[in-house]
Image (cartoon, rainbow, N blue to C red; front, side, top):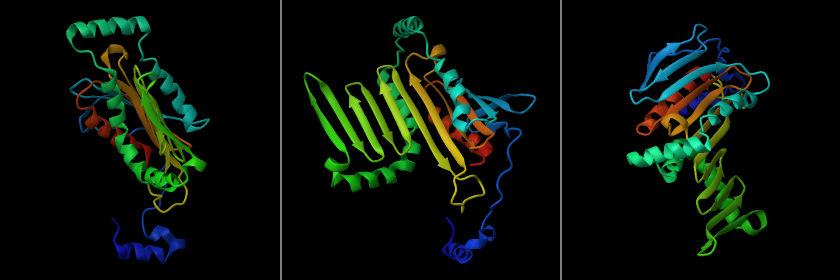
Length: 275
């Protein structure tokens, strides 16, 4: 935390903020910076152009760190990666065979566990949005009838349900399905698992005092029972300047210590994304 004296000095020179902290905008990356070790992750391969680095853990989790150009917006650049990850969902026949094999081995993972995995991976991002969410609830509770809708109930005939529609907070839950949207985070849980999306604008490194947010951070997670090759969650962490190039870490994980690995992935992405 900056000292009060430091902040006061900066406040006196609003037109010369470069004297109070680093304001040099990071240069656009042309190659990745891939350390040999990042926590649990060990570097296994680097492409000749240094735009792809592969990592793995002792437990078999895999991470592909990529530097991707942007031409039509960073969202468009991320779309093919989401499609690639969605291809990791097994076809219905393959999923049934995998379930049968897992049941015989006594190792079938329940939907609740898959959903919990995805939600826990989004927990840190949710904490960052918690203050804003609480503020929105406090503000709107007094006049929810005018500005929003809250409905929570259940019956033996129709099951449990909860529907909350307030500024910045949207929750729809019916029996074993739920959709939660708060502070730029969306969790969509169903009978096969959960999908988590998070996206937010951020300042680039060296622009702590800028009023503009020219960078972004994004998370995409699929945590399902029916992923191929025994994976329990796949997804990506992405960050960088909106104009690119952007850094994307595509991960495939088993159960176990993935929370630690997730933090390592985020460090790799921030190191290269300049956010």
